[in-house]
Length: 115
View (cartoon, one colour):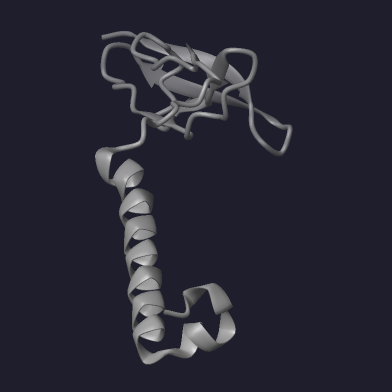
């Protein structure tokens, strides 16, 4: 196995020489979450935490995407629930009107309901 030297600049701005043994470094990529979809693309950054200096197995950092949101089709329950609720309310109103008419309350209020 051969060794190579590579000049790099660290975060503090000073140069350092990194010695690597060829064939022994295994890339280990850590990637951020995908960004929001902008102009049909999502991006992320990936970093080799083993600092191999290669990108043979580097994951994709851009991917196509769509900004169209899926429209949900209402289910049967979502369509029928308001209809059933309306029928129940209508039924309650009819029952109340019949009960009030039988007690004579409506006859005193609305003259056309008199016998």
